[in-house]
Image 1 (tube, rainbow, N blue to C red):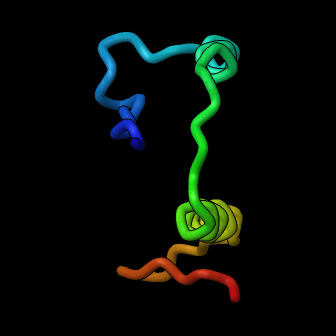
Image 2 (image 1 turned 30 degrees about the horizontal axis):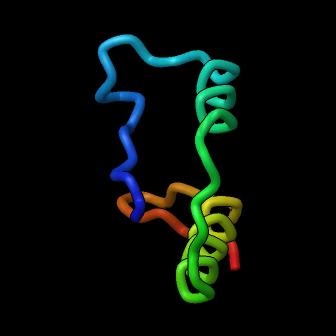
Length: 62
């Protein structure tokens, strides 16, 4: 169902942001269930939280 994401650091020639957006828009839609939607929403919300490096840890501003 879900394709394994490819991190840009692993690509030989990283795509420009506009190229990546165009590539994603060209894909057909994928239908997901409610649980998958909640998981994706949680991941997106966590990635938007402010992250602060403190010594050897990352502190998430909650």
